[in-house]
Length: 358
Image (cartoon, rainbow, N blue to C red; front, side, top):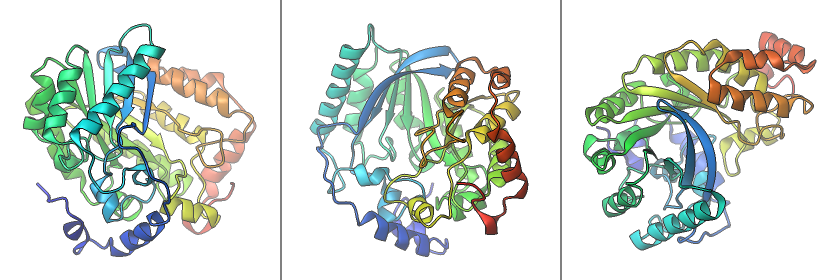
């Protein structure tokens, strides 16, 4: 298993320049955060292998992703919201969980059947979430049906997942794979691991009956619209062939603060993906043996996935409908004249002419 330290990540991997730029950008952060308050918490619905579940989604505020501290992914600004100092005490993390439970009690008629816990890093990295805290969180939610935890593949091991599976929780690991193409992951996303490491993590999960959700990034930096669509379709096909991977969550890039994507965006060199591209991928992969979902964050805004502004909400509703029903015919119900513009972009946009349309 790879050793997750900044020195190891940078040695001979050609990431030194990316990481230096990312560290300089992140150094502009000037906010501080309360270690007893979660980053975010919300209630939603999710399509799972066991049907549609009400979900309580929790983003714990930890000391931040270890890889992001070294430099990190070109699109991810979440480390800028992390607590200073690199670590958060067990008592503070559990106080965050208590805040989330209070939110659920206030907003929901009944407890959610599924709990999703993210850290914007790796829940299974014991520098972010100590083993003691992981066990306490598993105990807190032992009466629920399903649990999803987020982790880079380095930290996924069967013994960590048994904290949940041995309590009777149907457990999934959400892995930020971003793409099944190693070159795109390394050069466009600046992520250090290979697809083979994702396959290893999936094998570890299946040992104890846990499943895997692959998180893929729609339109990484430096890819044209058409290249992004093609890469996403290929990535979903490869993920569907990995034992234990039952769900793919396609995340269209949004322009987050303190990121390389933001730098290029402000230089007029990047446009977030079209919502038509998201719909196209969902339509083309609907027959794959895997659940494919997407939740375009910031849809309709200049910094989020968008079309022309007139049809964005309609296409977003169709995407959410597809998430729950997995029926591509929902996209036949939405149309707009801007779809022709999108088609021309897909046909003519090249790496030296991006973006053709903002």
